[in-house]
Length: 335
Ligand SMILES: [Zn+2]
Image 1 (tube, rainbow, N blue to C red):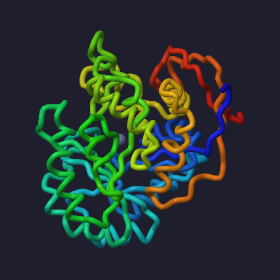
Image 2: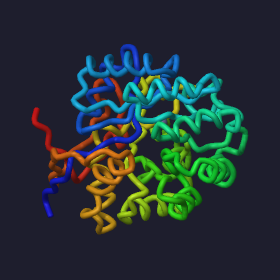
Image 3: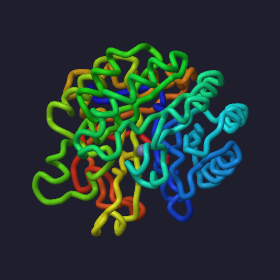
Image 4: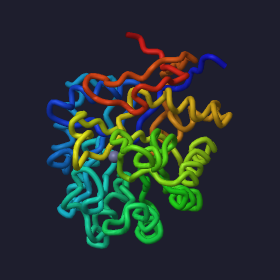
């Protein structure tokens, strides 16, 4: 097979930034039909009004995708804020436990305090997106701790709440989602399907592969590839593409985040082909997530061709995932 046509994919987790970086980041996601935009700007997107303003800025920055807006579920969030957001088209609330990733300081400490907020989300049909790591736990064990303790509480306490465990990185998380009810799904990133912790710190430090949650063990990566290529509709693409300026990555105290958006489909095609699962790529990128969110899969299509190309060292000043490497598939763009 030398060409592949699939429904236009959706990205159910991306960071398109703010300020000067917004204009660079937004067009990078234009291969996607819809992009679920994360709210952890400074300050966070907290209300319907914030989401509206952010959506307008994204459209003005040249988005050809439909931005699906989120609000941050913070200690200050109230049921009224949730209802107002839902009325104004916000589709999800993102919960960051305190201090686990970029701009999550001041995040949620005690989830029980937010019970009325979760009830309101359940009633309105707002999806709860979870950064599933428990603060204060050893870094490689944070996701497993969250999956063992917090996730079961949420799943059983709010049976009508659609929950997405974002950017899963461990076999434990995959198992929990597989075993869970239909109202629980998970996004998987491109980079977590491709790398392990060895690619971050196994040899020389590779800051462009550093992200939260950090990539884990080979067994974990294998479990993620199994899940993504299995056809299980609980698993779908959320790239967590997170561009940072080069100097913010290549320094002491470097920022977490891997920039994958413009090459996501090409890398995924390689991963799915290696598993003999190219026929399941469309489900993962373009159908399962839409179904979970209650949206129609795109009627548009994109085309990938088998064509060796070198990922540039920099795209508009941003260092992409797999920079300098040769990929075997390429997305066909009009321009
Ligand atoms: Zn993210």
